[in-house]
Image 1 (cartoon, rainbow, N blue to C red):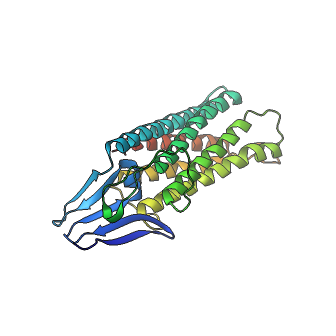
Image 2: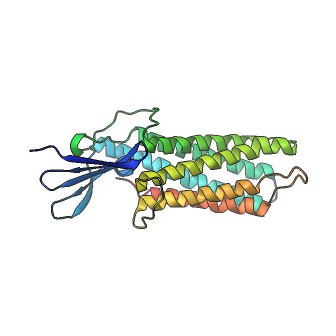
Length: 280
């Protein structure tokens, strides 16, 4: 029996999909996100029917379920707390410390979600030669894999949550000048938003297997990435509106800043809910 023909797809140096055409007419497809989130391969039989079934062992699938539940739950709670903080800032008593405390609690959950997303990549089942069953990777708390697009996307996301943490921690500082507020609070906010946008774009590349975004309305993974990317865009709009004008000492637009944060946070919560269903 001959060796299966292999075709690789992706963007630039990144491989996000491998297809093996076996001599018997069967086609096996490994996709980066499908394998790491569901431990599964897609198989098309000689008759054209496509099945997606887990091929990783029971231990790996249980690990994927636990990590997915933790990551999705963290983003749901973190997004909800951010939305609450924005609502308090917009409609509450105006106490900056109160809303800052809620934001900071939400940021901790975003940190957990970002790091757990990275753990999902590091401990995902790995593809085998010729499209065989996925192999269970040894557990790792950390790893450096910049040539893997899924690692790069989740690493940038995790760093973005840490940068947001700097912004949220500095927001407790009192008596700042306008220049200090923009440098210590606004600048980390914008950097965090940029990192979220980059991570979302890389996630689109992973799903679309090309550098340009695509539309796949029947794909749960696509909807998760799209909703989260919309949240990142809204966060960026909020951040830009939160710049403090040096001449007046007031924000560019307080309403846009609060509503952008609230609506963007709800997007991340919704993305977390959808992610809960992207499991083995």
